[in-house]
Length: 113
Length: 114
Image (tube, rainbow over all chains, first blue to last red; front, side):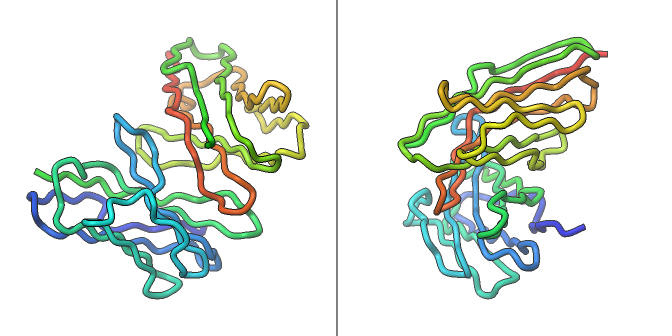
């Protein structure tokens, strides 16, 4: 049963600290997406990759967020420095050019105090 | 710009009732995909269905059915004989043909009472 995995599942940190979230997409999937879910904004796209190349990161605050795919099995989302307004659930999803539907990981619940 | 509207914020029904969740979308694209996802209390997002804009056939999967009407830009989801396990937040989403970026509605919180 192939699944997207995300670590950590929960993260509590203080304002100003660096946060790194990791995602392992489903093997064979060539697209990876990062979404953020908050009560106010709902689910919004932050960034996405196809074949490890970043295609769109227009949803991310550029000064503090960065997303990378060091290899096909790992995607990372970093926040430096973190702020209380970054508190949210961050989802990673993967998909393919053939199937088009995206499969989501369990999410990382981030709390910045 | 693409937009998805789920006008029903919350729905509460008694078990075994039928319930329909509404979804209206806006897009300038002639080809696109529509999706439904379920988010149970545990928090994960579970893929339910994908439809492409070429295919307006209704789809049924067990107690779930979907009605896609291009003329009214709607993609509604019906649960027949609802069960307590159907309680969740349901999201409708839209993506264009190429980029696959999902635009989500605000979600409908469905509560099935025993």
